Length: 452
Image (cartoon, rainbow, N blue to C red; front, side, top):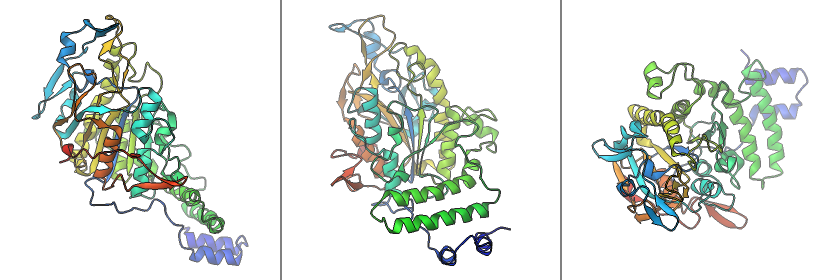
């Protein structure tokens, strides 16, 4: 069997290693690890996050925020060149909590007692780009690190063979890769994008036939990297780059198995709405998210929809598109919550469902079939990780036009998620360009009312 030590000796015997390099490689301490697990600021309720992002702006009054007034006033004038538009779908009470959910999401309705619905979200921007980076980075105008990168930076990861922050996205959302970028944080905290399909990550196979030989090659690279780093200790990106080689090597050994769902039971596949052999669809994304969470990945984001208006939630023209979009995610999301709960993982996993904004309760024409952007109020929900299930927090006014009580800003949601991970959002900072930055900027209130 080829071992690291035997491979080094073989290279030395062949004259391929100078004696000084050989000595260093045999005794070298490992490079400092920017992804080593770190203690939180205080005892945490949760260890990880699964962040479900629906691209395009899901309409709140058609999904999780029923408005009888709009149904009653459908087609009536709502002011100058505006008319009320009722929902195309009925709402029904679910669970012991009796929370109303639209007919678009019957499966999520079935797990509503594990969910805390927020009906008073407010974003900081009303266009797709600004609102999308707002919910992810806390800024609608400047490049900033994403929430997943902040969590990776604050806590590190429990599995050194997989990235700390994974993004499973068939298509990129509005704002593209900026939603999972690390910006001024060390690059290793940037999200690694996974594209569903037969080969979720390219080049997962080893270039060399022996893991031992490849390990030795990596040790040689690390030796020269450390020499380079010793003269450039002020460059914070170098340790991250060096660690990326280690992570890539570890992924070759662990990622193929993590993405392989062929050994999951028929009952589990059914829970997510999957058929044997499926490697695409939101069901695959949700099941792989659970598998990654099991394996110690700190933050997993699942993105549904890209920038094509016909295949995302941006229903300017036809609300009827929701009849195709909702079934695609409804069963898998409910299955994820049930699966996490059955494995005892929901207690320490925060599941977030959100979008960039809602849709208008009024339309410019009484016959209009779509709705416009609406950032003044919309709906999101959270589950697990110490959040209080079966509850509704905040409300919009009777028209669904603005927050009526208990506003929750994107910074408030971010601060509360960090809190459940044991991170004080005011202390999770990074010094850049002469000042300390944080995810929530100078804002953010922990929404204690939705905590168990």
